[in-house]
Image 1 (cartoon, rainbow, N blue to C red):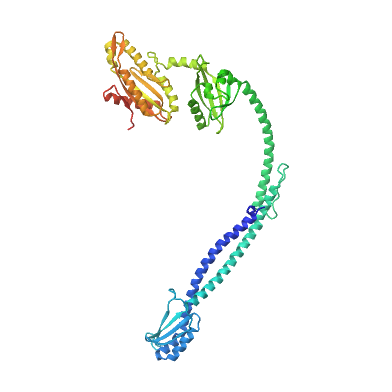
Image 2 (image 1 turned 180 degrees about the vertical axis):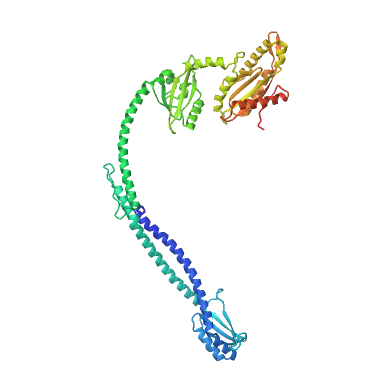
Length: 523
């Protein structure tokens, strides 16, 4: 085992490494502090030394005795911490002595001066005594003292680190290594279990061993369960294959590029073998259905974003579909991989629904949608609205229609409404819708708009179309239209709210002089 992979080696190295860093910082800080404290102590000792000879020096200064003063000064410089000593009587130097050692000046160690008082009157100053500390000597002694203490601290740190490393090794790392070695050779399939290291039966390591043994037991049970599940899965796959091959519903798997990866025979019967031949191999789903690729991409995006199956009806188009046929396709996203889908022929159902809706959702006079039909269409269209595929609702109100009814009768007014509705439809795409809401009010839904400006351009065309003369028999009728426009950008917008906004904008157009359009602007 390499040194870097051994828990024993790594734990020991980390303990000693951390101890070395901490110890070094402690030693350096302690040595610096002790050196300063020792220098201060040695200087303070010089003050005590002065106090010891102060009485004799006072007598020498009082008696003006150079001999006695010289003896005191000579005695002071016998101390290795004293570089020179001087005794003054008044301001005159009475005696001075120098031991001849030189020292570099230090700003922190100044000359020590002590006033000398009369032996008979403590309030009378008769001279002074000055001592020049041996700065280099004091620093050297303080440094040696600090070095000695630092070495003792370093030895103590090393000793503590060694004891800690030994305790950690004996109580933690060695038992863990023993457990790791046991796990490396453990025979799980035969139910072999670990034994806790000696002395660790009742501590956390012993509990770890017991948990590992419990895990080994569960793994054995899981292996047995997995074998049983594998057998069940094989049987389920056989059943699924039988259903897949014999189902009447088209079942397929499609990848992210819309290519079919697999499909059942019902899918071929549903769409026709000619479509599969024309779509290539592997066939592409949008080519099989004859629909725009973006429609399928939008359906797939919805399924992935909602993590649920999403379905849509598609109208089969192409030369091999002479009659109208509809297929309902459901896509289901399972993760980020291929999507699973089913397809069913809903042509008969669509025909039945169309018949019912044409009666319930169409205006009997003009043949366009009524309010109910428009609401149903809007709820579906608004679900696909986003910043790239906007939906607009236009409110169209005819100006002067009441005058037509009053002057030419309701029959002429009804024919005028039929002509106007046909003009509105002729200006729109197949993906847009027109509805008569009642009287002379129409609503228009525009889909797939890139910007609000596209809706206002169409609104301008509607205004122009409604302003053109309408021949009804021998009479030529003229009306105009006021149009309000409201644009949606998200699937959260509600049709009734958009219709109300368009209605407000339409009334703004009427107040502005009629025969015009206005785009709704939020206050």
